[in-house]
Length: 121
Image (cartoon, rainbow, N blue to C red; front, side, top):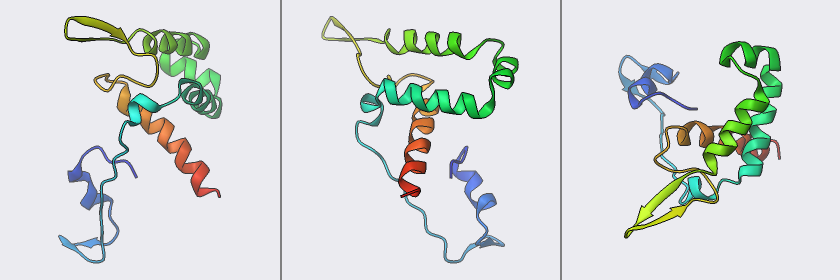
């Protein structure tokens, strides 16, 4: 379950009644190095599946462009991340830049597909 903030948790919990938490447990799980280790090929496969599920026409009407152009632009973006360290510049060659505003969205899509695969086994 993805929530916009921790304040949304009580509203989303069926076990929460009148401000009491009965039988409700929560935990946070972090994946070390997640953003740097997301395969671009797997990410694009997931995004293509999501676009296909949504439908090309609906995708185009919502975004104002076609999926091929969107994916090409995203590919360019992912391969254009530059970071500086000790006066030297480095191009990130894999994963998603952590400081990117797209990082949470892309990692959620990737982890959602991963969760589906694991749950179906």
